Picture 1 (tube, rainbow, N blue to C red):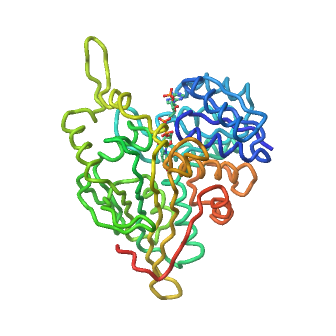
Picture 2 (cartoon, protein in one colour):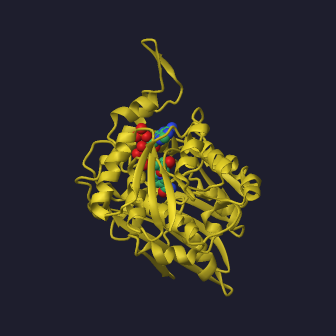
Length: 401
Ligand code: NDP
């Protein structure tokens, strides 16, 4: 029985709140706090109606203001903060957790606002302070990063003596019927996918032009989709934690129409994060673009099709080469029916709740800052299916890569 504070009332925050409330035996009191309190109230009203959880509350907070966060944490007294606002707030929320002695979990690594760059160094730098304080920070517990990292940990524990080649494959085979929309926060999403590509090979990082490497890959229950190598944050921690890896890449599917829109957005300067002056007001083009694009949290209605995300792995077991594929497919419609939002928010929120459950029930424990692949994958993966994201695995197959 624990109190949990969820920060961020977007699509992911909605799913995390729903899923925590479905397990009152673990999450006995839940507070949802965000910049706009009315969004928290809307979510909590739906969750109370659908789950019957009796101890739900909301609050307004600026997650970039440490004293405000500290005051909120002290007044509510949670054991754990689940951070599903934006990656810009990782460090301020970690600071507030340190000051109050409360555990921390997030789904995306820190990014400075003025530079489209994401890496773990800033958060790994908290290791000693979290250890000394006797609390734990669990980083990147969404789907990717998150489940993909835990899938890799399962492969290493049960299927391989050495993992040599890791390809994370992320397909959104869904259709929301809009000309252009992103599936999670547009600002963060567009920053991520317009960056140069990067993958790891033989101890070095290899940089590519954006979307330079592509291949048609087949996804279960979806079919063939053009997939592109992009950089994704879990590669950084996975090659560190599984040093036998010779090559690690991340593939994401994009439709031609999506890439055309993206190219236009970039060519006309709307993806820029450099502030410009417009009629005496400073605006960041990408933030303005976010304001006019569809809200990803509201894409659920009429969203059909499935996501399919997994790991394709080649390595050695008992002296022989082995191939292994582990994946989850998630239906946008089923996610919407259960939580009122689409599959990408759902596939992020369910693992965040499951990771929080691992921490609060002591299945995952420790002092310091951890990436999810450092824990025992078994209890997490046992719960993941019953929580809404069943997974499958196959060995001895053609990985296409
Ligand atoms: P949204 O933009 O829908 O929601 C973000 C929420 O955070 C909004 O409610 C916003 O408030 C709130 N917020 C923003 N700034 C502040 C602040 N300073 N103080 C308090 N609240 C704030 O994003 P998503 O729900 O789509 O994504 C949430 C997180 O999940 C992101 O960090 C994203 O990177 C991560 N993610 C991780 C994935 C994974 O698999 N690991 C996949 C998808 C997303 P307001 O409503 O007022 O704007």
